[in-house]
Length: 136
Length: 130
Length: 102
Image (cartoon, each protein chain N blue to C red):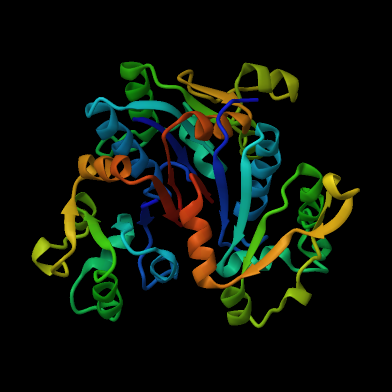
């Protein structure tokens, strides 16, 4: 859609459902996928809660949008960085999160992990590398 | 420099819309260009023409409209966020069976692609939120 | 790549200041604005954290927000520069990008 390719970082620091930011930021990622930019998602602080498994929203009457994260691979969004310290502070591990994958067409559609666990220093470097940061 | 501005919160509830306005105004006064101001989340509420703020306080919606008029700014309201929050123009009202519109004519409703495009085309994206 | 980070919430209300300082790289700038200006004051429980940040980062506070909150510039931590909206625009232009900690 355009000549310029920028390094886009979508910064997610808020928990899902208590506010709409998590869901509406995901909507930007999905639309943004059509623009062929170099996309990374960062989950820091309460943002890591967005990726937990087994979300069941029936009793709160809200739409469970967590399956959308699993679809990100189909949108070529495969750089999903989750901060280790943020998980640990919240008593979580990678096992508590959805297993997000993408299919690498250059390797015979081999399924690969989209989530990359990074420490704070690595996350800071990822933020530094971005050309544009979306915050919600 | 070309700026893209994202406003995540509605008028009065948060200072975000005020901060965004003063940033935009200062940027224009310095001769910079504002590529687009994109209103997302509750920010879409900056575009209703139906506010009646107290006489002794700022009129956030009109202030945006005047700035846009003066500088021919593109002020875009996200369609999905607007539908959710009940901000509608003629097209939206007709498409969705609503009996009224409430958008101020200086704003236009469009898709999230406008935000992404602004980020691609501008030199800086500045986000104002909570 | 040097970033202008913005922090708009009070450090006593949200963790955004701490999160920002934990991730800002040496040479970056942090602009305290809206309720974030409370972090610029001397004698707070976060003064040490902010002073420490000054070793590696430039820290700014938005003057109009200090004034609105009845905070005189003489209560601002020495080393923090007070800027107005025009200064905010200049900072945004001088740095490579702006990153909001909301």
